[in-house]
Image (cartoon, rainbow, N blue to C red):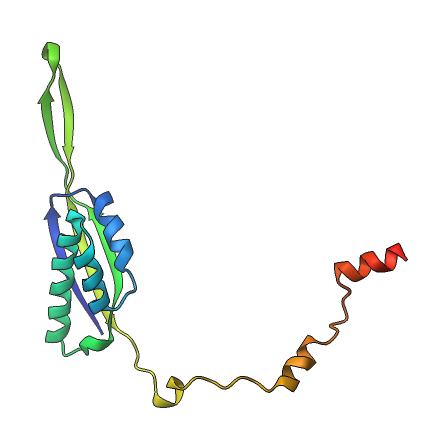
Length: 149
């Protein structure tokens, strides 16, 4: 199951938001919120708002909040506002005020069965010795020694 949220027409450049969303991609939802709260970027506030909305949508769909993770984040280009700034001698410079559409999608991680939570035991020492024995190929050092002799 998937929960998603969109924030459209945000007045910030998509390039600046992409720096923020790369930090939270594939992280747990709660961990992503902590990361966004600690970032000082302006774009982090917009992404945080969108992530909170996606979490609320997931709760509405009765998804387990502890298993949620950020499966997809996107920062797409919205419409660009074109403005002009007056310069000397009757000239004008173009100003491009870029906008962004932010998308956050959450999915549930599959819960591990109790039998997989235990760490597997290391193989016995005898098994390691058998695999480390002579493999049939000569190493570079042995070749050098045999040529020099």
